[in-house]
Amino acid sequence: MRFFCFTLIATGLLASGCVAKPKTIHVYDAECNIQVRKAVLDTSQVKQTLSCTNDECVDDLIASSIVGAGSVIVAGSIVMVSNVVYWIEREQECQAVN
Image (cartoon, rainbow, N blue to C red; front, side, top):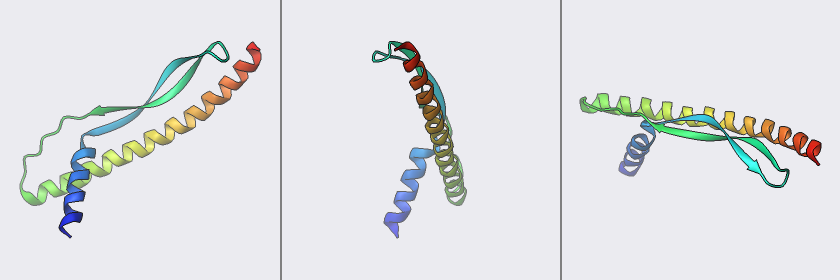
């Protein structure tokens, strides 16, 4: 039980300050000789201080972990869908160039 609690707290501390958001970058594709778009995850650190009693800190830690994990799941899904769309665009542009 102690290991589970330690793991929960460690995971919460690592994820609580991270917020992920999708970001689009432009990359040169040498095979097709064109610029293509690519979606990536951009993570940023959120400053946060915990000054509370024992029970309050656990609640804040759990809430922060849920928000951090949810942020990664939603942003990761957006990145995957965006990259599929960008891949389709790349294939069409590549065929037009060749």
